[in-house]
Length: 587
Image (cartoon, rainbow, N blue to C red; front, side):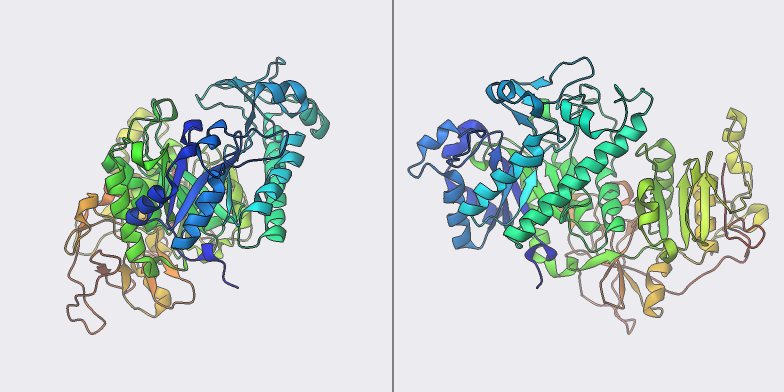
């Protein structure tokens, strides 16, 4: 049986305030239909129950008294079902009120100095304790006994090292953590044994995630769990934060990492309509918000828009563009069905996250029009690497790649066990860094990457990366089309520089990673990023397989067609092969 969430869908989340329990359900559903969404993520339970709970450890929203039925969830589910709109439950078990914290201290987060974590009057909870391990399932059962919800999302399911204001509180030292952890608990990030504790905490959360999945599957198989990268639907929140360095490709990177790890598992990109949690009634810039949805859709994720409160009293200026792009996805959802990654170049994201080396290589591949996937370093041995011709390793230290024998580009202190590495260049000093473009990595002197019809050198890191990619047999879009017997590679998810430009003849962007339809022999390259590369390729006249111009459009964008004829570098050793290996390195 094909489950509903394996088809493209569009979500709208209303993160309700306590005073919103009396909202007009029909009015919200009118808005969702006009917006283009077919799934409503509604605040159901946890910190506050928007239904008449009978559990003594849950709190009924007092504003439910404003409703004739006294039941917001029940009213919403019935009204949505009449319109064919699905309702998913937003649950938040991360905090409890003071009364229950006093009654159940063993449920609570306890800092290294013995203090609880209290945020806006609510006490944070630890996933090791019984509130998560036992009571969570009682709440799910009560909800499922009453309402045929179409899925659940658990907000902020974490060990609460950091609160909503990004204040660091350290490692939890509650009774349950002491009992579960083998050895003395570290205090924080700089303490001995912190990496072991990270593994412990990840294991606890993974086990809890699997138990919730199993519980829902037994109770209501149609109801998926939306959570981290091991749930039924992978959750990514596309958001901004005051004071955080802006990385324009964050959404594309996150979606690619999820799709590369589990290609057939749906991804939901929950795009935040406000600037930051402390400024949650201030709208995100519409053009910046458009990047969230465009990058998500282009990488094969399902779009979601997230607001505080209700649509009727919401001041967000970004909702107009959000609706335009959501309706775009609705109108062309067949284009995005069953897409899986098809790139032949892999960029590995370090354990530390988006480091400068990683971001530099990301931009190098993006700007050279090399389709690529992203994969977290910790998942390297969980993925079949043999489908990649080239793996790019940004300053990772010692790396284990199993039996992989394809091309490698490495930077910094990366060392690949069992593979000899030829150092092409060094930038350990300022003088060496400034002189990188003189080192002959491009066409000058080495024959590494002379472009057809070009003269001179391709300089710097980008040239080295593309040299290895070319030497491994992947050239621009050709790699995406090779498996289709030389057919054209369609760039059918091209992202315009401006969201208003998704019209025939608009600008199309370069693509960092292609997707292809499962079971479809024609590889279709999908752009995974937005404005950063959008003005580098103007849309080309669309040509059919007979070579004549065609009026066909895919997803409302004019496809950019690249020749599928493979081009290989004349130098077989351009990737730095040593002793029969296909490895290359840049240092």
